[in-house]
Length: 348
Image (cartoon, rainbow, N blue to C red):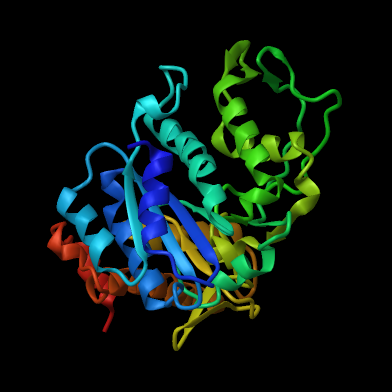
């Protein structure tokens, strides 16, 4: 059974008549099981399946625990379809690194399955939801050509890139609508299937020159170059990074650090946070962020006053990750030995 057939069969059998059909795609290797588990349990906790027919595709690679895959497909309140991705699924150059293969192949599979849904969303494996309002974004873009994404801090130009040996653009310019790969929420039937096809072409055949050597193009560039080439950049609705990802130091800035107020997550400035993104279960996550904060804010009069609040926000992130994994429907300890460091995330 092919990937396209598999998605249709399993998703179709569980469909809910009259409800919007939404799908989330996420890819990961086995070392990300603690993050994937947090993500799946966060969907359960926030009841994101409540007002829609939701399917989550876990595109896994390199030997996931089969019992775990069976469990998530069986015991959650929404449809989860694990699909193993193999090198043969996308004929990328043989020298393509594993991480790049995974990132690129998820777009190809998403293109094959996504038109069966009203709206689709791409996520990274180390994300989890902290808002019950995320699916409202699906509602907003359904039957439109808009894509809701996460503003990427840096804005790169289009010059110097080639596709199948020819310049990708006649004129170079700056991509002001540059967004992260994830999250990306859009209706694939509304012109976005062509963008994904273009992405796959660039991922396979795109090149650039670095240090007098012809090399491929990085994943985030492939995505944004495809958007630019298909003239869809004006269809981008870019949400602030601190609301969608908490990366590029936004989780350690005095104006954008996260606050968990009784389960309602927001920044200090008051913006709702939808998603936490990053390998937050690392032992040096909090101390590393605080060290960087001191470097970034050196010389500010209020630095010492704000730091305890930033530390509290970072610890709240780790506490939420722990709670999702050990108090959620599917417990991580059933599949992975609990690290002693993780126990410290529980707090007092």
